Image 1 (spheres, rainbow, N blue to C red):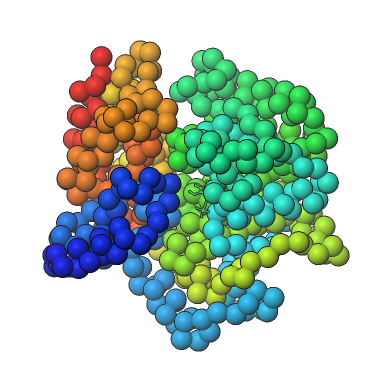
Image 2 (cartoon, rainbow, N blue to C red):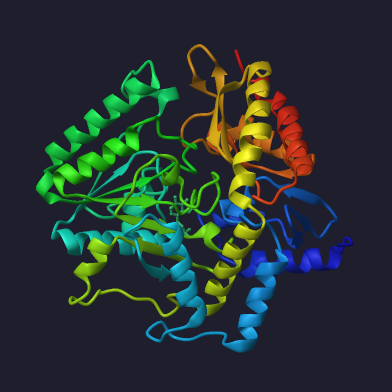
Length: 449
Ligand code: PLP
């Protein structure tokens, strides 16, 4: 698109005058007006292009303006733009069937929501009703959404101003080999000690009071924390032993982000409930949901499920979801993600980690990676403190600004830069983006000791 200063000013004025933004002090933000997007790139009104290395909020798995998704939405809009959830609808049913087909055996039903938070909200509701218990366990360093139960589950600073959020959530430490809460020396030790800690938490909180454990299969915004071998299988065992429902939050990592339909499929484990959103249709129309085990679904065969949403299984959203399945299958998206992750991203990040003294750790899978930045590799002191903002966050803000000047839109959070581009990104674009991050990291190196 050609630069358009008049449109830029108009969009900015309407936004600043009237749009109340998420998570922000309204007077200090300056949202960038965006004119257009295509594939892995989007443009502002001043003619600047940005390679989208964060897939917006890690939801835009098939990139901007994918023609198949746009076409599916347009065709559905022309046919039947909306229909309420208590009626049966062709695309809603087809999408539910397709999700059940790629989910583990014995998980055949889908409850659709508007996004990830209400997916978690409803999964917890199901677990509470099925078990007759109230308490839920979730991890420190997690994000599960912004509705009342979901923000209570959240183990990051976004929960703090919302407290007391829900008195029946207790937190535990998940595995994090680079900053082990358990002083582990190896991933095996981390698995064993993290599971011992979880078991102790269950016993001390009262196993008979715990309805569910909610875990992001790979912790997303809080660090791309890939569980060490055996951890999730151990969680599954604990849930079985104590009659607790295992809820896998796949909102960020499901639908191809790590080269699997669901990330837990890379770890040989089967949860009882799966929550999803984002990548199911790349967020073209809001959609989330819960995939339900047959055992839990059977509980609601005769007892009414006490939950619902006007837009549950919205046809426009579901049409984009069905198109997503078609694109994934036709274009071999899962294999592509595994290949690009292992062949292009991982070696490039490992190589860059050697050269930059500010890089403490790189970790990830598929097209989902974190670069963790430190002041000192020996002590592992974070480059910026936990929950850094303002001047404290300046070294990472400088890395982000350098990326943007070079035409890459990065995802940064506290002392990390994440790599999470659309799954359709070309190899050339991927390499170009990684080059830009490589150069930008010199701004982090300046702050090392
Ligand atoms: N769960 C995880 C792991 C997420 O990353 C997010 C959003 O970032 C959510 C839940 C909440 O999803 P939504 O913003 O669609 O409510």
